[in-house]
Amino acid sequence: MTVIWDVDARRRFDHARRRFELRVRFASDSRRLVLFGPSGAGKSQTLKIVAGLTRPDAGHVRLGGETLADVAARIDVPARDRRLAYVFQDYALFPHLNVLQNVAFGLQRGWRNAAREVRHDEVQRWMRAFELGPLSHHYPEQLSGGQRQRTALARVLVARPRALLLDEPFAALDPDLRARLRDELADLQAELGIPLVLITHDERDVRRFGDEVIEIAAGRVAGPGALRDDALAA
Image (cartoon, rainbow, N blue to C red; front, side):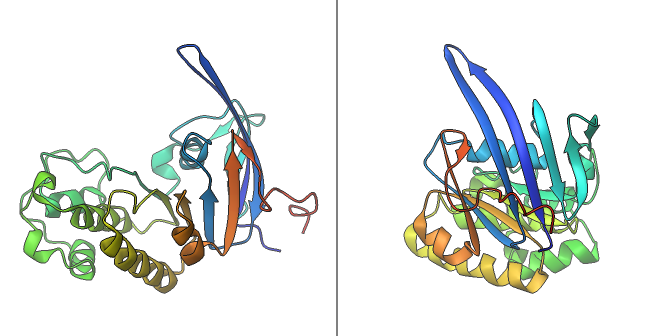
């Protein structure tokens, strides 16, 4: 088995009087991996550790055999250098930038005042792919939930990431739009062929994207995706 995702992460979170212990360990060769479980189970924190947005207290993260983090070996590749496209649940668009500027933002580090008119082949490609042309000069507050999601996806894909990390990407959408965008995203991932990790507590997302499902409950891997002892030796 060629392991794509190899995650062994431990992290303690202290919030007010509540302590949460995250201890997740799994390996997978799936290009469509779903982290499934109830709210508060630790799914988002696991994804942030993979993305490099949160540092584990112990353990490692590897993608396709490359070590992105290893506490014991003192390896911690910065999030910007991991080339992972992270789409937050609220899409995290820049409110002061229009759609075109938000999409173009993915091309340059530290670009805060992008020109209102951006001409770049890769930007135009994704603007067309997600039918965002007519919305080029709209701002996030003027967009529907589906339009914001398409803008967020275009922004991360313009940088040609090595993998997609999606945190509840359909949660804020109405049922009909959710079903349509679920199919569009599945088709897009199949076309691009890049690995995808999707967080959800919706079983319909599991059925559509769950080539392999890692069930997480109370900060632990609870389902059949738990790391097999021989997984990393293969």
